[in-house]
Amino acid sequence: MDASVRPSHTGVQKSPVDQTQPLLAVRNLNRTFGSGANAVAAVKDVSFELYPGEIVALVGESGSGKSTLARLLLRLLAPTSGEIQLLGKNVTHGPKTAYWREVQAVFQDPFASFNQFYSVRRVMLSALGVLQKQPTRAERDSRLRTALSQVGLSESLLEKRPYELSGGQRQRVMMARALMLAPQLLIADEPTSMLDASLRVSILNQLKDVRDATGTTLLLITHDLGQAYYVSDRLLVMYRGELVDTGPTEQVVAQSQHPYTRALIADVPTLH
Amino acid sequence: MAALLSVQNLRAAYRLANGVELHAVDDVSIDLREGEVLGVVGESGCGKSTLATILALNAAPPLYVKSGTMQVQGRHADLTESDPLPRSERGKLISTLPQSAMNAMNPTTRVRDLAYDVLRAHERTTRKAAWGRAGARLEQLGLPTRVLERYPHELSGGMRQRVITVISTLLDPTILIADEPTSALDVSSQRAVVEMLKDLLARKIISGVLFITHDLPLLRHIADRVAVMYAGKVAELGPTERVINTPEHPYARALVGSILVPEPHIRAARVLGIPGSPPDLAAMPKGCRFHPRCPLADTRSREEVPPLVEVGDSGSHFAACWRTLEARQLLAGNLVGGPDGRVG
Image (cartoon, rainbow over all chains, first blue to last red; front, side):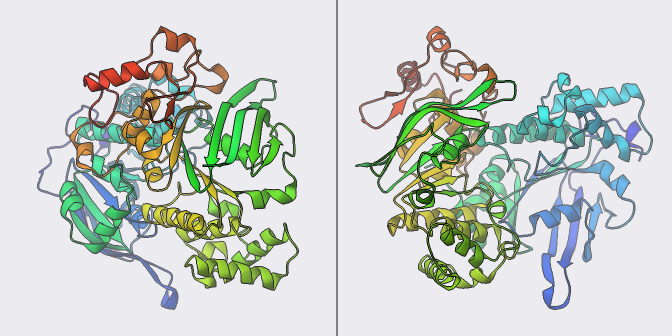
């Protein structure tokens, strides 16, 4: 599929996808670090599906394997065993650039994600490197404009450098960078944990708006159940490398019987 | 209740190379009472950490204290001096609990040697005695003593933060200044650190905590009173339950309104957060510093700085806003914001 001819950025679903076919399916994924007596199973036999247009939150405590799973899904790390399928096709191995046209990421640290010497324009245009055919100048500009407007940033920011931006703006630029490729799946690994509470809401709203406008599927990884509860349709709960609980967000929070899920909910500070 | 720590009219500024001064803390007066946890909350850049640095007596250029006095346990200190209290008193009277435990620990030093270093800086002691004391304290607080043998990288983030808490209170400081001690932790570890601070207070190892955070719900579980800071000033001060349930300052109301908690009303509507960003310290707005972002601002807010005055008849709840009365009337008439107190 040539991304440059795909009707992207049109504000509608990009390809006529069957809502019942999972966009991404993960089958018995394992990842072990080390070997012998020192082996640590960071991700243990994880299987789940993401359907088109869904916002799914992956929650769990530090060290539960959330970020390892994210890196496996982004193919930044090879699984020990198991399979990842994108629209029914096995993509566990093979060319990564084609995969990255469809699956993009926003990372945790808005201060470490940037090259200090690059302007916002250059950071964003660098995302187009994974395309098969480099787009024309006109198309590049239109992609830039669309991506910026999708995250609510003005074009005046394009010539700025990272140190001139606030943490919230940086994280928006990172989202815009990912959206330049009009990916089908956006994996956001703790995108708000280094931001203020008041900014968190606006970043989450933005992610929700992007989903509503483009139908991009979103996997939100967080340890904050409050954020997951606010934004997600479905919850995946991870504990010690295993997926221990899953279901529609409201149902999991209100009714889950799983002891770990209950403990996690009990630990979240509440207001009332 | 007697004030353990009393800070009056604290003003401090960062001096830039070009001589411009950025006032990060402007006329802040706060009291910390015996046995109390005082929470300080606000967005990034509101002066929380600058306040913590000054109170921990760690102010160093380019941060200059312009005015302010501190009274702690009957001692009077002028904060504008370079050495407000003798060095030997610092760790015993006031101690700091830093945010990032990993950065606070030497990666090539075992926990026990860090404990020895801290004790040795203040009193004559031997390695064995220091290790014994640290071990006893760990046991007392329910942590395994084997962590003494460990290097920082061998501990989890939550355990590191608890170990740092133990070490920073080894000298039984009167006051502990905790600067975002839980911000890098997941909720379960956050709770463990909060429980530990409560335990330290209950055992009278420490007598008061100034707890700085941007996480308001967490304060509900630990703080007795909360000070909401905005642009270097205290916007609201009052008992925790009152500030969270009936905030008076529009900024405090917006802050409470932007909290995401797993409670059903959160999913029902779009949470708006606070529009705009905190002011640039170099171009501070005239009048009330929150007025450019405030839905209730009027001519007076734009011209005159509101003083911190008592609101209601509680005798303990204060807010710095000209419009608290109008805000309450509007809320009562339900014209602004819903039951969650959000300004709409």
